[in-house]
Image (cartoon, rainbow, N blue to C red; front, side):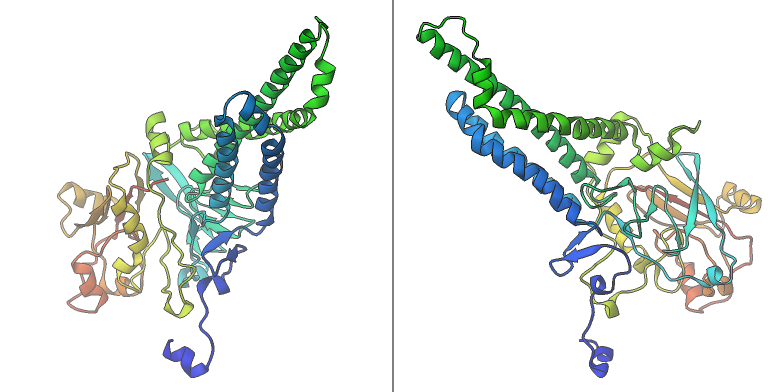
Length: 423
């Protein structure tokens, strides 16, 4: 226990206990759900109830009349669908931690927007007044969860939480397995209808009643199958249509939010890398670690940097720890890059001449950052650099931050940040 907590005699609190968003926490902060988390229980009931009827009244008949493998799939598919449902509903979707407003914001000098370049396409990013940082490309503030989410897709009322970068894959698996489950149950119920009809027709023929119409009797004996066929037929149009729509989104590297907001704009999709690369991006890249340790004690948590800027209030290696771990795990070099430039013509000339005074600071996972023109000691101490928060500090910068050495030449400032940001 920290000395401050001991001296005041107050119990230490964890991050999830004082969380500012609308998320709900279970199992002592290990599970993160949305504010309408009960909706996921309702969705689970819509899976469990028909599956129970199917397992009790349809699957056993087909197991004996057709094949025993039917019972195996009848247990496996609903279980798989429920697993993906709760993996989606109980995971951090990609929350970006909130920041404290800086002096520039409090004085009213903070710019409301910035322009960045993604694959040489201009993208506008906005300053978020609730979370107090410039939202990275594809991030959006969810009004339901009240937090900024990386690669925001949509808020799903059936799952009860926001779908973002960290739970999009399990969401896709949930709707795909639910679609297959609907088709499977419908097909098995239809099979029971015809198998039962053939059985009754054979009994009628054995009794000498050739050509008798036994459909009415058949339907009377398979009423549960008829009800399940109607139920799965209706739900198939919903989950099946959703599955097809997200197949299109994955293939074109779009999110639901981007598709509905920018679909009618006459501009290319800056994130589209081709069908195979887009599918690889969604299905093969490792899921990044959460940027929030909900179990950490509040007195041990350090202030996180703005996702699109960096300040010299703490060593830069602390600023980039979460993003660097993500890139170090990802050896795949994206062809996409986010470029944020404040370069003046003078500094562009410096670059052409070999960037004297500038230095490649750090490179990992295809991401690199350049301090292409030095800044003064005073500006560094005041935190007026806008270099990207995903790279280490150049050898000259620590001396300036620690007050060692003379001020560097007061040239016009320019920073250029190249980022490979997995989506």
